[in-house]
Length: 190
Image (cartoon, rainbow, N blue to C red; front, side, top):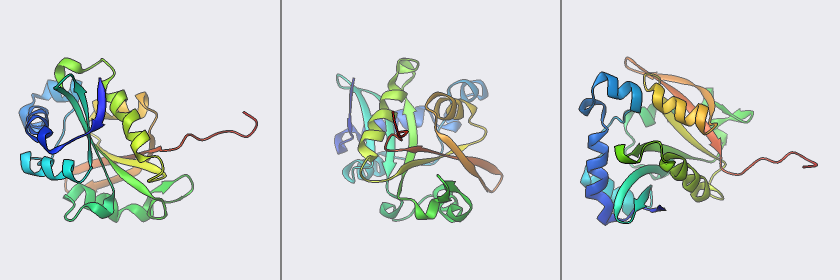
């Protein structure tokens, strides 16, 4: 599996993967077991994000196995409402003892893995690639997960060890904010 930055030519396959895993395209059972993505990422938006360096992909010999967004909040000219709500909540969220607003961070997500590749380490590979990409650019990767998306919470918090930082609401939806350090922490004497 090749974990790399997305390129503009990946946009149609990324849009297809995103659409296939969108909340509205899945049954209630599928959403509960595999998770889901929301929002609107069409071919043009994904092409632009790829050209800006804001997407990573898992490429299995020309087959798109997954994608992950990783962007600086400052590079989003018109953030979608959940990102705006997260940015507005920065003073009430803490990362390692200081307000999130005072922490250099990258927005992590969305993350989507193709059905044929689930359970094969693709999400972990994308997460690891994101950590490498973010290291030196930010202290943390910060994600928001709709609390109804238990599958995503389980992967990111229980599986990858992302740290819960708090919650925010947007309309009738509640989101949990989680973070991961981009540099490993070391204990003196180890």
